[in-house]
Image (tube, rainbow, N blue to C red; front, side, top):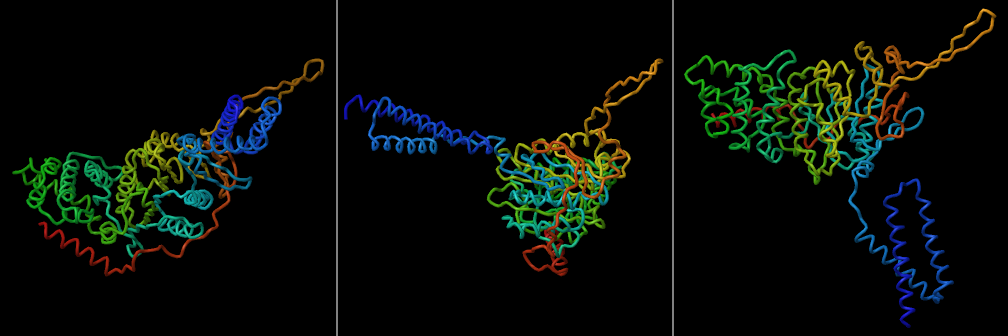
Length: 537
C-alpha cells in the first residue's frame, strides 16, 4: 500500500473514530425523551464518510468496511475503559422515583430524599391514601426502612404483605414491646452496633432523658442521676460486653445499693468521671440517697417490663440499616397502653440508627414514622437536612402542625416544613392548623369589575385585580377522605389539589418470627437477667 493511501486511511479512521466517540458519549448526557434523535448523528457520520470517499479517497468497499468496523469497535472500547463517568448527585436521586396515583393521573417524585410531610386529622385518609402508598413505593425502590407503627401493627403487617406481593428482597424484623410473643429480638448496646464508644454516653443520655415528661425540666438531681446512669452504662459496655443490654443496665441499677454502685463504677476511670457526683457526695447519705431515688424512679417502669426486657436482650438481627451487605427493614410497634415505657425506647432506636449512617452511604434508607408526635426526638428537625446527602429520606405523618408545635416548638415545626419539601395537607378540625395551612400556599390574582354610571346615563366598566388567598382555612375543613392539597419538589406536578387513590393491597395475617415465643420464654429471660446481675453485685 502506498504511503499516501495509508495516510488517507489513518485520517479517515481517526475522523470517524472521533465522531463515533462523540455519539456514544452523547448517550450519557441526553434525556430519555430524545432517544430516537440519536439515530441522526449516526446516519450523518455514515453519509459524510461515503461522500468523502466518493469525492476524494476512492476506497474499495472492502477497505471502507474495514474502516467502519474498526472505528466502531475502537470507539466502543474507548468508551468502556475511559468514557464512564461518576454518577452525579442528580442521577443518583433519579434512580429512585416515588409514584402516587390520584384521580387525575400520577404524581412522580424524582428525588425521594427531599422527604415527605403528611398532615391529616381523623379519617382524612392520610394512612390509606398517602402513608401506605408511600410505603409500597419505598419498598418497590428497595429502600431499607425504619417504620414506627403507632397503631399497633398496622403498617408492620402491611409491609409484610407488600414484601410478598412485590418480592421485596430484604428481611423485615418486627419489634413489639407490648406483645413480645410477636417480636424479634435485638441489642442496641451491642459492640457490633456501637463500634465507636463515644456514642455510649450519647445513647445513654438520650434514653434516660426521654423519660422526662413534657412539663418536667432537668434539675441538678436529674443531672446527677444521669451521670450515674452514664457511668454504669460505660462500665457494662467496656467490661461486661457479653451482657451489655439496656435491661441488664437498668435492672442492675434497681438492685444495687450505693456502695455496690460505687464499687462497680470504680472499675473504670471514665465511668467514675461520669458518676463523679456520687463519689464527691461521699459522707452525705442524704445526697447519695436522693441521687439513687431519682435514678431508680426514672427507669423503674422500664426495668420491670418483661416484654421490653425480652425484646432488647437478644440477637436475632444486628440493629443497623447502614450495612450494605445486610440491608433490612425494622418495624417498631407501639401501643397506647404502654406508650410511656415504649416511647423512650423508640427515641433511642431512631437516634441509634441515624447516628450509624455516615458519609458515603450507598444504601437508600427511609425513616417512616406514623404519628411521630407521640414522642420527642432531640433535634429531629435537623436530621432530614443533614442526612439527605447520605441517601436518607424521612416520612412524617401526623394529625396537624399543632401536634408538632406542642411536642417541639413553633420554630421546630417551621424547620421541619422547610426540610421536608413534599407536603400534603388534608382534612383537619384544628383551628391553629387551619390558619397555618392557608399561609403555605401563594396567593392568586383575582380580577374584579366595577360598574359606574355617569350623569348622562352612560355606563363605564373598570377592571382591577388584587391578590386573594388561594385556600382559606375553612376550605381545609371541607376536604374529603383522601383529598389533599400539597406541594412537591422535583416532581412532574409542583402544586396539586386532588384525591389520591387508596392502597388496596391488604395486610398479612401475622409477622414472620425466627421462633415460636411463649410467655414462659419471656419470664425465663427476665429471670436470667436478674441472675446475671446478682453475679455482679
